[in-house]
Image (cartoon, rainbow, N blue to C red; front, side, top):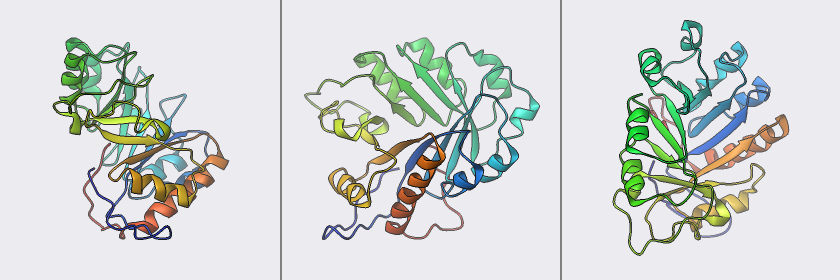
Length: 257
């Protein structure tokens, strides 16, 4: 989603036309805690050890802007029944039978790709008709890999190390979300023209949120929620962002990444 900071006339005010906060959460987080996070503007990524989530959790996932549930083969009908308009499957490309998964997959899958982005791997990911592709390259991507990445759906690139500067913006860079720690926002891939998805501590203060969004207008935020204490901190962050944005309309555009 592309949006600008509308007004920040002083340290006490923040006005946003909308926001996007990605929360990667453990299935161990209590359902009642998760409920406070499942809000418009929030994309939930639920890490799991099995393919089936508890009913109390499943009921809450659909209240977020979008939710992705981590699943692994083998996959059956009971697993597929968990997904719907706003709740989607999240799989790793490595070791996946893409033909079998493509026949099984519900709409809106998210796919993780780790390592080199060859033409074959990019084609395999795209054959799943994904809503989101999250790519973690091992090293500095080649120009060819960047070109393939720009052709993927809802692509996020999460590099393992700082990326080199670009003498000029890369073609298609605006279609790529570069996920980096907020401290690296200006030092990883400067001049390349990527949209930003900034990793922030879940306990980030209201003042720090304002500083980040004034400094990087249009950036999306990402945080990890590993415990109930993290979930309580994340709920505060959701409240800060929600208060700065207009009330959600009943019929919002689905936002997958």
